[in-house]
Image (tube, rainbow, N blue to C red; front, top):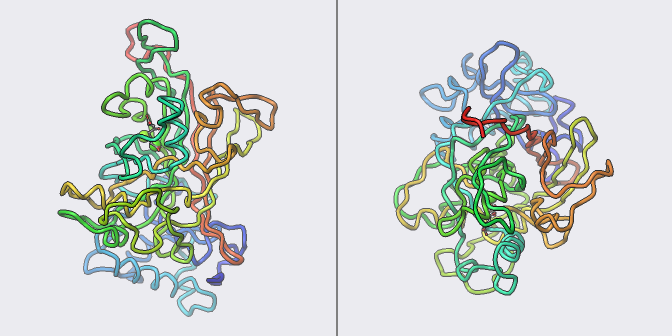
Length: 420
Ligand SMILES: O=C(O)/C=C/C(=O)CC(=O)CC(=O)O
Ligand SMILES: [Ca+2]
Ligand SMILES: [Mg+2]
């Protein structure tokens, strides 16, 4: 696939995240205006809510963009998603006769504030990166048996909190929690001292299900993907997680990118999951390539300082693809809902500088990393900004997500106003 040219000049650059091939879905506002659905094109946003309101864009017999979230388009299903993309191409392609209709509805991204792009119905986080699972298992448990016995047979997950999901740019407050420092006899209630990020891709479920669905059907249910940072308090996690898994450690916040990249935009970049180490049960086998070649990176910038890229990874390091996770999620008959968000699990590569969390990069704090500024980090410090970026790289173009960024701010001095 090559670059599809647009008359929006900035969309034709090899460095923009948003060429015509992409057309990702976001929600934006300008000044005091209402939040509305828009599509990124180069350094602009096409106001699709305005196009629909003027009768220039029509997807159903009722409006779907009269609300500031994408769930109503998702609900129409995959045929409508494809129809939407082709109607947009009719406005934005180089030489498009309908150019003049779209020109009035372009807004510079620089003037816009981005909001959560969809109503997050429910949020599940998986543990599907083999290197991450191996590393965490080595540190938290037993290096000789780092992978739990079930790990190579099923995608492990836990039910997270949809209410924790925030859009890029939202400050994250360092949480308090119950934790038990190494060597201490009793737990304490204190601000987390080992606050971390997790580099993940989130799958946005666009079609509801009842009963079990196959892996192939699950793949078709996915509307698109976001970058996702599952902020994690490692000290709270290490103390609380047995036997039911993460709870408060991962409930503070989950940051997603402002743009949902639709599945169609990623089709040219499909890649298979890595070779199986043990045969999967038939229901989980991969019917065709289910991952995408998406280069990922993490930047960390101390307050007022330049950023250092501290990790480079790729979505292809996942052992279980989102479609396998979604299929497994439905095995119990669990109904999936439009707007369900599935975190992929932390995507760590095999190399040291491709690890997707500070827990791994600093090996539990034993090997702090050095930033370009000369400072070192074991975990995130107050004022640090962590930014995830990701893009599938084509010939002369890239399909990106925009930045998935958040700044850690100091813990409340006294979270329940009761003194310490
Ligand atoms: O092995 C554990 O105790 C769990 C570790 C995690 O970090 C859970 C998690 O969020 C899964 C992931 O992002 O891969
Ligand atoms: Ca996670
Ligand atoms: Mg979370």
